Length: 175
Image 1 (cartoon, rainbow, N blue to C red):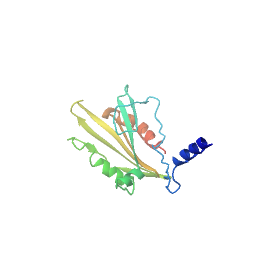
Image 2 (cartoon, rainbow, N blue to C red):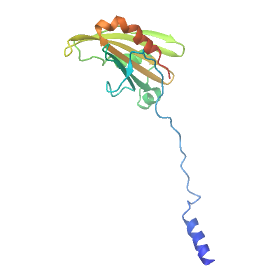
Image 3 (tube, rainbow, N blue to C red):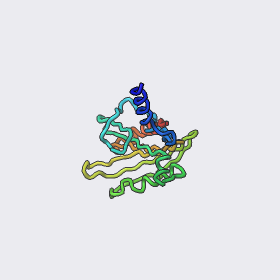
Image 4 (tube, helix red, strand yellow):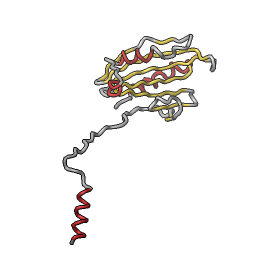
């Protein structure tokens, strides 16, 4: 009996003291799911931009694109707030192609569709290495949770031919 009592006292001696507060755990959702539609000639890829959360390309047509996401919560934590997608776009475009001598950027067009707000523009520059003019479709969409930034690019010759596809990709983004 003495051995049994020693075991019980030993066991209870290692239990947490009831006066100690147990930590309260808060659950966090990690990541930011969204959907996007691509034309069947585009494939998902990697290696275009390390900041991108989604990348795609069509090697045969020499076109590619990326999507970057900035959650509004993370922007607030970093001390950044944007009143609308126009402000977010302006903050991005001030540094876009800044080192290129012959860049052209169109004025942004804004559109509201339900709870989503869109800004789109086009840009181009002469690439000295490739010896060709590169064209960009730039899009920013604001959702209740985030700002999405879409960049699609290819040769200037394909700009008009595939602009509607780039716009369709852009307007398909949802979270």
